[in-house]
Length: 235
Image 1 (tube, rainbow, N blue to C red):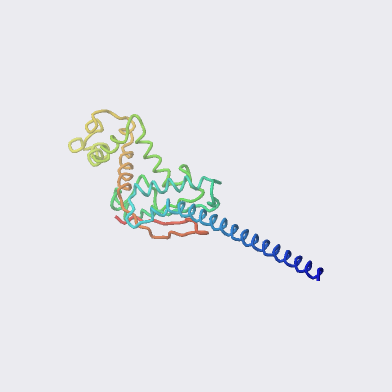
Image 2: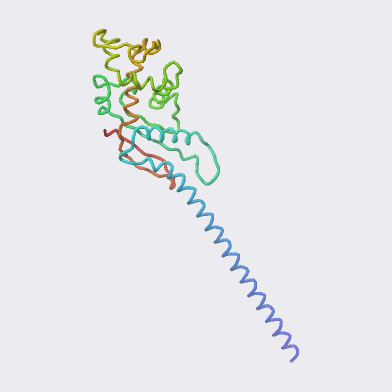
């Protein structure tokens, strides 16, 4: 009888130990699941924030000024090879921009642009820099005019709005109808006077900044991460 009681106590002890072990395993699994769930939530939050900073530009009424900001943001991202968080920096972003003949006809001279090289379609991808991409190079050149201490943004805008008068004087050599740089700005600017096409180019750039673009491709995601979009000039 005594042996039977001991056996029951031992069996009870084993049972309790098994129950405790089971409870511990259940708690561990729940804790692991909770941690995994939190990790997934954090990953999704980081990915959503990353995508949103680019997706906010995907509109059918995007102004050129915003398009330039978007492109600069893409170029800055494409330069990165690593960073904090769960973003895969091996996935680069590609942007296509189509000014097209419609833009050239509306804002160019005789249907031709001088600031933006034909065929007026550009792709910004992982290999694009300000030095090797036609669109980026033009934007950088126009900004250099604005930042030039001898010219400046306000002066370029003033000259741009008087381009026809400048063209009449410097290109058509019509001194009656035309105006000089000094007539318009009150001072001589040799860099512009010796190359009046600078003003023509800047005028195209100014029109680009206020033009409207439509999203015609994408956005496309790779691994749930923003990777490609295309825009086209509409008006």
